[in-house]
Image (cartoon, rainbow, N blue to C red; front, side, top):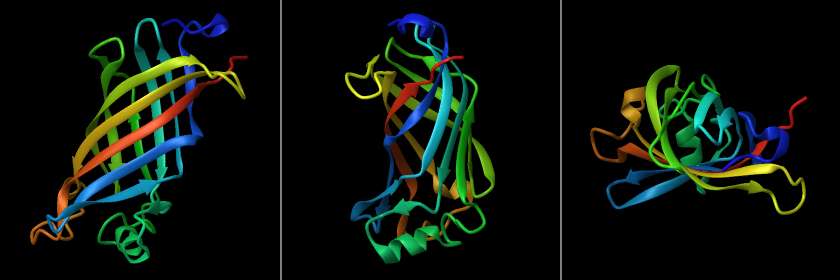
Length: 184
């Protein structure tokens, strides 16, 4: 699908802050998964719709703006036992490419930094829709669903892993819309 008019070539896209949800789930005592959501996320990337070429991916998540819908649990997740938000206020992901697996899906492998630890990390990306927004700003918008998993112990978060209180594997889901920025 080709972008309209002067945006036909690779264009810079930015997350629409009003249409982003970064959520995670992790097992609690083996009974059920607990949900958490990050709300302060910024991101941009360059993408060519025709060639599916992706570059200059930059994502930043404010780790202290997290909600698990329970005040005590929020304090624990933000503490030194988990995200240590006072020392590490941001989670970042950077990448300089991706690998298409179909016309509307692919993988983006880059570097995820949590708690000052940077590791290779892969996102599974699904392009849901690419079109001019039907009202409001009328910009070209990409709708994306993104999935990934990580073992939190890899980043030094070992609280509750050995005794089974909290699962090690964290499932991440991102639902977002991006807006193509106008060129000069």
